[in-house]
Length: 414
Ligand SMILES: *Cc1c(COP(=O)(O)O)cnc(C)c1O
Image 1: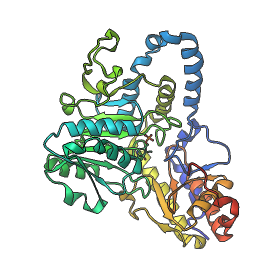
Image 2 (image 1 turned 180 degrees about the vertical axis):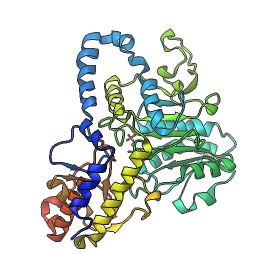
Image 3 (image 1 turned 30 degrees about the horizontal axis):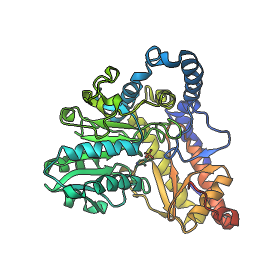
Image 4 (image 1 turned 60 degrees about the vertical axis):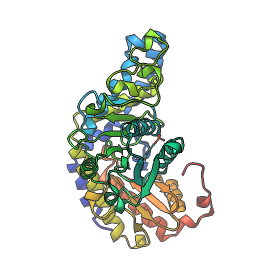
């Protein structure tokens, strides 16, 4: 038998101060969704906004919508909605492009601010897509001696010295959920004159952040994970005001021009964060993200964090007390203070287990080569959902259902 008992778990749901938020989401009936860290659930308000922006704004206002609906300012308006969740005062956060492109823009801009230095330092286990962006950027500059240095997480502090231009890290690891101490590492890096660029893809909307008070230089993040903006929602970027004078975006698009509608032949950057806009904003998806962010209105991120920790701890306790699940090995840090909002377990059959769970309406995900990832999005997940999911997981391992041949077939997206 796994503990705690179901009755105790149901009591947690009754006492949950965030419980009412769940009603703002269009959760498919009967689905246990432990994957909000990969793609957040559709908020009802986002669905309504999607219809409105397509039928009434685009459909009726057409090109007039840039002014009548203020589409042109969506990147700054949505940026400010996100700013509240990441501890950023106004004027520093812009919603635009994808996380990858924003990372490219800020990494290039930060490097240009450090002409005497050659090293971009990052973590070996950083999200590979972030490493790819840095590799591509560095490849184009080999003649200037710019170099990407990737080290194990445990070596980062020892590698901080005057040769490093930029420290580029992801706050919460995509696979293990290991969470860096952002304030501490930023301060250590600053002691050596290093600029720090954080990827908040697995933190924004799940973990309280205080970018301004931690004196973070730059950050990027994702709109479709805990911010629930929908598949491929635009990302965001943050640049501290103190750097705005010195910063230059490498993608000098017209939306980052000081006066795009003058149609001057020469590029002249807009002041402030606006210069990091590049092309025309995706009005439909940015409007949907904006509506999704309204779910966070009135929410204290400390409450979100408390529930996230409680959900993860409940999951761990259920796994640890379920006899069938002793073959799962925890890959995440054991201490909740060192983790983000998901848990990773390794198992040689992780992929097939994930498929077998999906066949039973439990959605989590697999990360190569052998990790099962369970995410806990506190705005819509119930304690009961966690208990039920682990119960199904136990059943699948007990009966070895994952050995069924149909679960071995790898899909294109895993
Ligand atoms: C999800 C994620 C991204 C996403 O980047 P896209 O440009 O939206 O594909 C980037 N970095 C990290 C760490 C992520 O987890």
